[in-house]
Image (tube, rainbow over all chains, first blue to last red; front, side, top):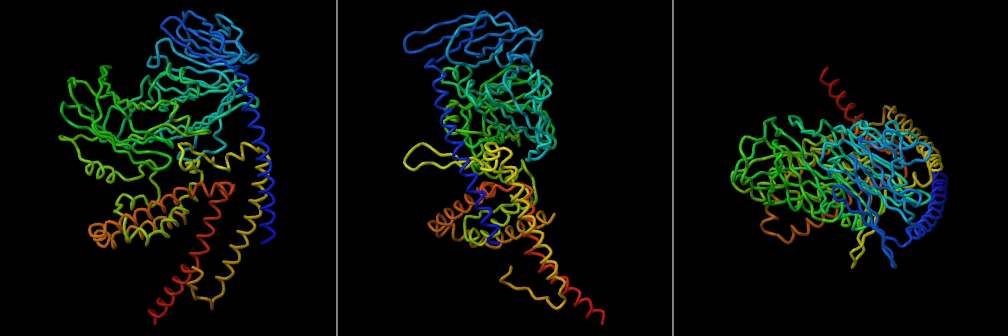
Length: 507
Length: 99
């Protein structure tokens, strides 16, 4: 046994050494990346029929104006040039030879080229984000993963679009409820679709390419709920992300938006809001940091949009996700129209998120839970009861969840009594769902900064590639051998007919 | 399967513990509020540890399926002896009843 530990320790030391070397290289890349931007900052403004790009450095600023004449356009960086490509189609394509965006005729329809030392990526639709334009896709290379259901991702579900001419098609963006999605992209990858927006950086000219990962959680809709899918589309990943500078951020939007879309309540009934009544909505947001929502907007089936001020927000933080209960009061509600969706605004700027998350992150979607009507303003205890009655973990209803729904107040003596049992349950449930790791965020004392430790298995797997696979292969073999011996030994001991004693110490 | 059974059993035992101790918890909560605070801090601490169990398991660098195998093996190892003993006792009772 000591030899096995020695071998394991040796391997671990070796991989830590390689990891350290990789980190040194990463630091060098980061410095190069700053240099390649050449001290330029860029702003892009869109004004109905023109795009204006302003490149600024310490000595001068230059403005380039591009007239927009087609349905969709994109502004992107390529080989030290800012390019604008336009198309009347819903998609952009990637030219397989030079990796530039082209329209459906394969034409690289850029209007101007300007020698700029630096890069910027940007996409916009001519009619803004809420149009009937179904999908916008572009650039770089992307890998998409769709889970086979539940929370786990399997390698057989990998969809690799890195070698395809079309980056990805509309089918890929039609997220299926109950499935989870993971996206990885490199080297200037991003995409937008009409109401669902994902923009990713991304330090386009870094070698090796910089990459990030988004985990996109498609909602698992409770039984009896029909979710309204705009434009006959199952897109649910209503989040966006950018690590551009603040100017870019402001051009896109100042708010972080979640949108709950449904046309029936939990029991399948049409939802009609009545004046002077209170309504609560429960939903889940996946993400490490989720500040309180600041306002909501209610849209009816007649496409009218009305603002409603929040009355109360009750968050339930739970590590990798937050369950929210929102309460709002309906006033000036039109009659004879059905509720279509509720958009939830969050006034925190994107930098609030990006400054706190340095690497891969999961941020996204809600599970729509419940829509409840109150005649009078519900108290906090009413909301707590409602939340508790619904169950604490509806999104992943697993073994033993039945008992969780009857959770009593455990802030007492029972806390101590049940500690070993809760730990045991945690190990058992983690064993069956071992991919549930979330990066560990530790705050530095007396500062506002935090350090994030990524999930080491995924991190090392990306950093070391096949070496890590070989390491796992060897370690798995040794441990499986030991487990096999253990099984045989245990069964052999059971075959002793005279041994019917239970050693309490062994338990 | 074994994991699911253990999970259900453990959840049931926790539920029973909470139910039985609920009156005592209520007394402490109402008459010794400071003690309740201490319990709450301990509870938060334990919850923090439990929340990070997946991270700690991930830190072992073992593949997912291997962690499942190890957990199942440990459950088997620590539960098979009591189960076999219970079966033996039940068979002894059955034999005596036959007489």
